[in-house]
Length: 491
Image 1: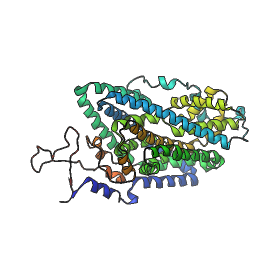
Image 2 (image 1 turned 30 degrees about the vertical axis):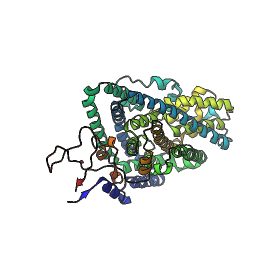
Image 3 (image 1 turned 60 degrees about the vertical axis):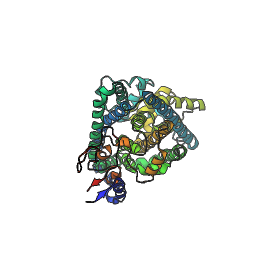
Image 4 (image 1 turned 90 degrees about the vertical axis):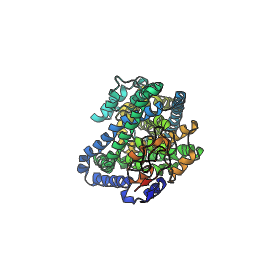
């Protein structure tokens, strides 16, 4: 019988043919979706249920995965003070990052001033029914609501509504209480860890349909809004994408350089998640994959479990750039002159309203309306000027938010002095590394395989090791202490 070690399996996984890798099929589906939406718009629009069904099936798992990951991370740490400090460090980083992103947007739109010459009359702008609903939601959105909205009406409602912010709140409280229970809570913690494995296994099933979901979402977007939307407002779209790319290279790249890591190798390592976001126009389906890959790259499980989900609500670099660009564009297009002080005031308001719409459908549009309504100087009806192209900017927002959260998690781990930078560098470069000890208390690296390309993170068959007190020829499962031993598999 031949024996294959972990390293051997990982090495073989990297040789998987391109046509058997998930990201290849997602990218192919996106291209086909664009062609279908362009050449046969009616057919593309009819594909909407395919895209929405896939996204809904992914969102179905986000709440439980976020809850179980945070609870498991907090309940298993020895010092709860470290968890609290990690949370404070993360919130501090999020605010600084958001301010820098907004400044990038303000500088870009002030330099190029794409709204000059539009001369739109805010009083005569017609508002569509779908846009009117978002405008009303934004007009009723107060800056302080993100604080009061954190506390849910019941323990179940956040999971039903998919409110990530409230799920995080419940998970943190539950995790702290479970940690305080000590040995009494150990069986519950074990159950949480096992349920986490089950959720990731379900995720692996759903991810097989990612190419179909990406095709449906992209075909609908192009068929519904048309390529003409891209050409008529191409300047603003291009400015948004270029500004976002510069922010990634300059700001996020500098942070990664400070950590002695490479932003481009990290992006390449996360290519499956980027393809998924590009196809579905939302970063939520990529959240579990990001958490899993960062933990494998050397970030402690509790840090990943706390920072990544929180960042999805508070660290929205893409949304920050979008808000500043869009608000100033509308001001220029409606001939609303803003002084430097008023623009800084606009930035301060956006810091609050952007958090208020976190986790809400159409959140970016609602946050923009809430900002304009709160400020009062820019006509809120002016958002109709960019309503038609908002869909094509949402992909960039989601990609930016995702990248920003990946970098934020690595930085917070370094700040906590728990980042294994050498391991992260090797993982991002595609080198073979052993699974982290925390990855394998219940063999989570086995049950979270999303596609063949990721098989190097674990095995499909349960690992077994020889226990010290086991009879010769018998295998025993991993000891209860969760510590890894040397092992081999019989194939």
